[in-house]
Amino acid sequence: MFSYNLLMYISLGDASFGYYVLYLGIYGTFLLIWNGLDFQYLWRDSPAWHNRSLPVFIALASMSVARFTQSYLNSSQNTPRLHLALTCIQVYCFISVVLSFVLPYSIASKMIYLAILLGIPMAITMALIGIWKGYRPARYFRSEEHTSELQSPCNLVCRLLLEKK
Image 1 (tube, rainbow, N blue to C red):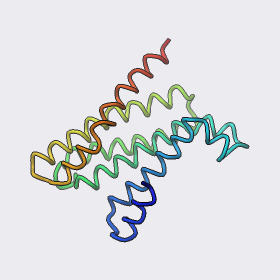
Image 2 (image 1 turned 135 degrees about the vertical axis):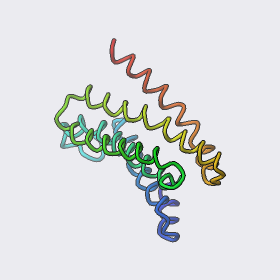
Image 3 (image 1 turned 90 degrees about the horizontal axis):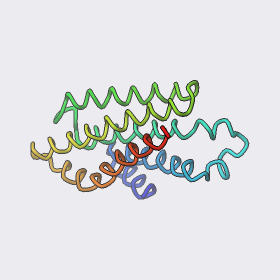
Image 4 (image 1 turned 120 degrees about the horizontal axis):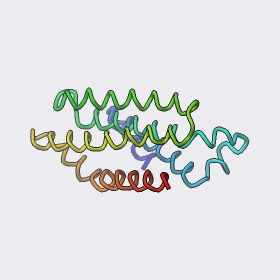
């Protein structure tokens, strides 16, 4: 998937493909971290970075998928207010990346969860408005993203409830 979209970005030069490739690379690294393979293969000599890397890569993945959403849905034209709100979430994610090096893991991860729980409904709303306005790519975005977008908030809420115990 990464290679195909990278080739599409190189050949077409469409920014949406570039943002998607960036998201796939960051999300792939996040999956390595989630499964513990990062410490085994990438940075085995740095346990401190291993402990901090999960919230960092979740925030980076959130930033890149938000930027992809804005680019793909042409939100600056179709939904300018939601475009601004999603830009604010990207800034919040960047601040979360910086603060994740200082704050405890539990606080840093909850900051990222908040950004995700706010960003997903915005992306869904942007796509629905795009469909309503007749913007054809919004249909493809909705059919592609709806399963993971609905699953992620449920996973986050369950995780937050389990962390409190």
